[in-house]
Length: 333
Length: 250
Image (cartoon, rainbow over the protein chains, first blue to last red):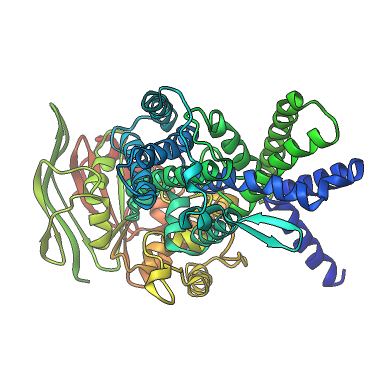
């Protein structure tokens, strides 16, 4: 046997064994299939439209990735996504403060929501499913209550500098992108770096993998989790504000159901629901897999109402793949 | 051999149950002490007290003659007492290197970036695995989940050695291990002693204890009933009689 064969087998094996490999292949297949049926699928206009909404969900999903890696998840992100812009625009429209102050206030309130979630989960030892389910209802209810259920005016944001920084248009030739894409890219890079390269990232993974072992080594598991709950809520608020400016609407009902779509994106990408293992690259793939699917099936003429069938099938398929990889990984020694 | 740890008149009761009754035990430098006793003899409680996991009811602990108070496991680790429980001390999803440095990750570059010095972590991990006696070439990036039980023990022992734990407590390190793996773990324990660490070795299997320890301590019903049995001059049968209480040996 030559030296090359086992070496190539090893590298090939490693590539395929990575949790991101399956999602990557799926995304490529989606792109190829949709493009071959309808070439408009990859037109600049369609890509630009798809990206605009994708990054808003994506911001929530990358925050959720870190939180899930630490062994918790947050069902209240969808309602924070709806509530935060409502709060911001209500403050602004009532003449109480300027847009800048209202923006900061809504981020601080989101951080507080995350803090409460984290405190309930870590100090009172209540499962995050129950805590954040309760918070989902509280936050959504508050948004509906302060607005009487009506959308808030947002048109006055027009040329405001904050609006431009968050979602201003950038034209690259005919191709229009929103500034939010850059925010998303920045957050992805930073959080990807944090998770894989830093001490904090090591603590996040350890907190989710084996909290008692982590505690015994001096890792502050509770504080790590609380910080991640706060990050998750703040990213949801940030995404909600961006969305409200882009669509010129702050609807107290917006974001309904996002929590489940976001969790689906994260697990499709290869992050473990039970914690300990997380991948930002995988989540980015997961985000695109679901958004491309939603956009693509409409473009190729499948009724939009059938969307959930495909999403469900993707989740089941990917979970089967990840569990198979996991078992093979464990058995391979 | 100087005295490393002295536990003096330790008692621990859970309500009306007296788990430890006036226990005194000394471990010297570079010594492996085998702690034996039937189920419920108080071994686990003694270890938990020493690793800071449970507070003692009365008594004192001295490290090199200085009285210490252990308020928690982190406290004990920082005082140089490291307890290795089977499977519970490591994060299976993380790599060997990441586990070795968990909680004490070395940083590189500006503090602001919080960046781990992964080159150093990998280099130390490679070196440690060799020192602890693993001959197989295992990359430091390998997740703990794909190691065998014996290799996991080796990683935990290596970690204790690297962070200069004076006392390494091994609770049933050979449980569920095959013959070759068990010999490996016993070799790691001897390696740790030979590089200047002390160990308390707890195992149900007396044969394993006899192979590796310098001195045997036997507990029964919360008391130390023998604390100076030399495995070179005693037989397994004699020790078994002490454990079950059929014979006193002093």
